[in-house]
Image 1 (cartoon, helix red, strand yellow):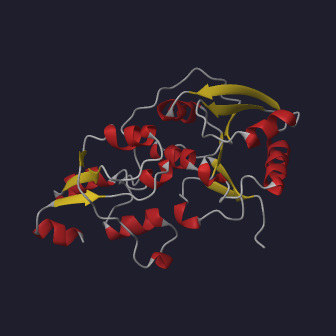
Image 2 (cartoon, one colour; image 1 turned 45 degrees about the horizontal axis):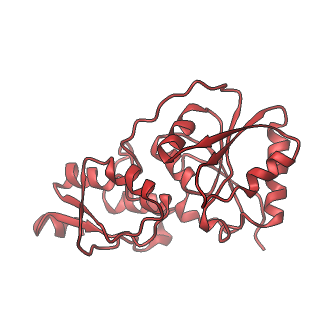
Length: 247
C-alpha cells in the first residue's frame, strides 16, 4: 500500500470506524511516520467515529502531522494478523518501522504532579465496552479486590474518578467498600488523565483506553484483564494479568 501511495498521489485518508480512545491511539503515530519516512500527506476523515470529543482532541487535534478532511477514507486493517502478537507489531512490520520508532504517541506533554510516589495509581473505571470485557462480572470484581489485597495491602490506592457520566465506577466503588486504604482523585479530561499516569510510578489499569494512553507516554502498567481480553490490542510495555481463567 505504501509503495502505491508513493507512486500515485502521495496522500492518504484514514477513516476510523470505532470511537474508543484505544481504537484511535493505535493509528496515532502514522501521520508523522507517513510524512517523514514516506513523504505522504496524512488526512483523517471527519466521518470517523469519535466516542468523545476528548479522543479527537488528544489524538488528532494536537498532532501537527494530520489534517481533517470532509471526505470518505480508507479503513486500515491488518492482513494475516495471526502472524503477529498484536496489531502494534503487525503495523510495525507492514510499515517497516524500526525498534526506535514509537508506534503509539500523543503530542501533549504531560505535566509532572506533586504526588506521593509510594501510592498506587488505580484507574478501574470503564466505558461502554466494559460489559464485553467482562468487568461487570462478580467474579472479576472479587478477583480484583483479592489481587490488590494480596499484592498491595499496605499501600494507599489513588482511585481515579473521571468527571464524565459515561464512566462506570462500580469496580472503584468495590475498592472503597473493601477496607483497603484509598484516596479519590477526580479526572477532568483525558489530558488530565495523562498527567496522572505520568506522575505515579506504579499504575494499575484495566484493559481500556487508559492502558493505550499509558503506552503513548511511555508509562508501563499492570493491566487487569478478564477472560475476554483481546491479545491483539495488548502492548509489550505492560504486564497483563488475567484474573479469570478461560472456560
